[in-house]
Image 1 (cartoon, rainbow, N blue to C red):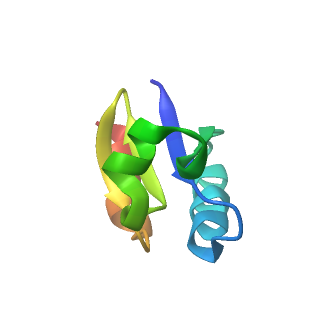
Image 2 (image 1 turned 45 degrees about the vertical axis):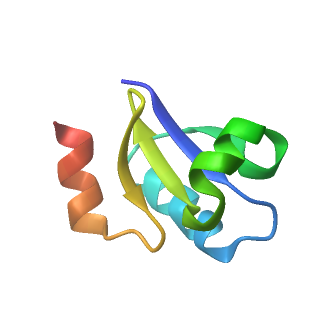
Image 3 (image 1 turned 135 degrees about the horizontal axis):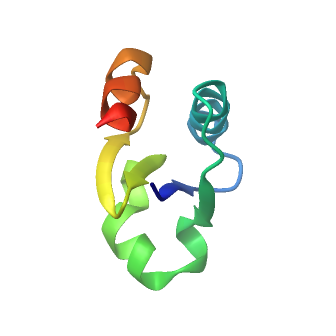
Length: 73
């Protein structure tokens, strides 16, 4: 399973998302939305965005139970 976290420097929700993913046993590959034009086009105002195998499973303020369910699929 490939877990990716699209973040932005200074984003407190991104820090919370990273901490939550780590609590759930995941060490996501982090990508900066401002460093990649395509990520910026897709996710600028949606960060943090969690993708599993390229599919968005959560964005913004993440809900722990919903994220856990999505990671178990």
